[in-house]
View 1 (tube, rainbow, N blue to C red):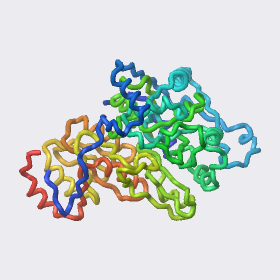
View 2: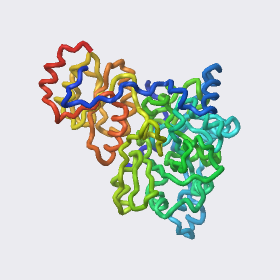
View 3: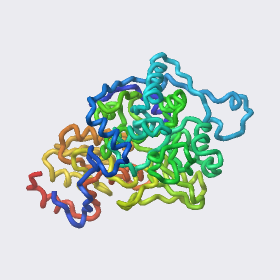
View 4: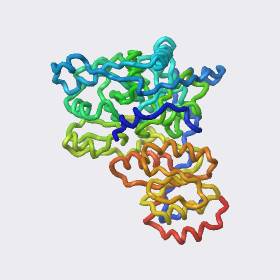
Length: 444
């Protein structure tokens, strides 16, 4: 079943809520980005907005359910009549909302976005986004302030028609290579970089860079809201900066209640990981800057050339070309230990280091006795962030994540868990019986 089909079937819900072994472990910084990002990383407008948020009384955060099945899209009449040959003509489809509750919810969301220049929680097929009018410096500063997001971390702009994209970047900026991948993967979980068009977006959207990241979401609610409001929406994930991305409306409320006025609830996100970000500036060597819902292997087939994948490491003083490249992300309160090339013996050994430990299973068919278990084997990518949040809520000291093969969707999964990790271990590099023996007396 496709991601879009699964998403359309999702029902709205507010959702329920050591010592290192030197040969086996690679330790990374345990200083995760906390809810309080360094003030120096915020631009003056975002700092002023942050001050206002911190000193003002909390605002009421309203949650409105919107069933994706209330929304359909019709192709333009020229396409229906067979008059158009443009492979991108389907991107100008028009939404129809069939339920009055959906109309009311989208009207209220539009008012917050346009009249109030506010930001709201919005479902997409990847993760829930914190959406504001990308053309409004006020709305953009509110995005950074609500998330406490560093200002050198650029935003992705979401559009809902080819016309909106052309207005945003100019028709000349959309190259034949862009068009080829857009025809294959839009609407969907793929973000593309385009040269910016002077005077259209505030520089805070792009962190002052010469390119802007743009995506055309597949989720009916996101598509319909963008179309109804007429706003291209800047929308990073709707979580406090550094925390696991939200894949349920309840996750958004948990992180941002009192800081935003509205969350649209359309159930669990179908993909569960953020979009792939692709640069085609060098047409002979396209580069995936962040792996996601569209795989490197798929893009290589579509483009007919090798597609490189960025290492994911960006120098502290550098500005990342796309979100998700520089800062530590996706971290729960508990320590996250990633076991690469995982085996049941390795996972059991690591669990023995802690009194209360959670396990996120992607491979093993049987839970480790005495642990808090989350079985994500059916769809590890979709379940990753929900699992991290749920295990964290169980009060575990540590979360052991079974690694996946670093290819196809596993590449995106491993990118996220490595950024969340306090420790990364390779199951092939140690005798696990020795680890059990050496750590059995641990009081952690």
